[in-house]
Length: 184
Image 1: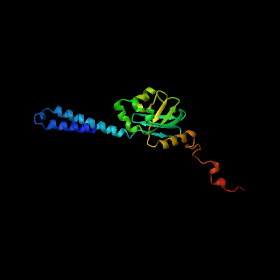
Image 2: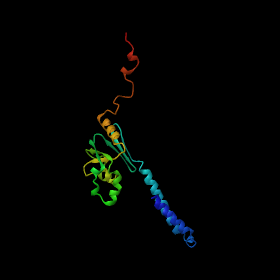
Image 3: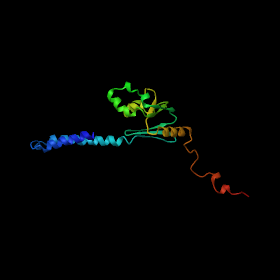
Image 4: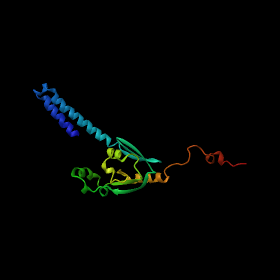
């Protein structure tokens, strides 16, 4: 997108610098406008790829994308498993341009979260999430993260209750200093 923007600015400059075309401003302004739009779209794509994340909390798993935030309760999760992306999505079943997009992801390990049901409508999920979040029509999500081991460990810890503090934050009678003094 940045290259397209720069090329459009070069065309706009060529139109503007020509003596005859200087008096027809819409031509160079059109090229400059398209160039500016292309650069803004490039910046937008650069920014949004750093906005998406997955974060486990004591009661739910938070999935955030640039256009959608979903909280998935651990009660909805049946099980999690890991798999390579090329096993989940065989490259031979994809078209040529989709295979080119998928190629850098093919060797990475993903977490497949099998659900009892989706937290929101599957239609809405498929509208806002990439097709690589869904391996088939069953309720599940395929999550691709850099450190899948840490995410899996944190999720299992929260699901089993080991990651949350069940004790109230206030002081209890047995923990006070006065309760440790000898009683007469």
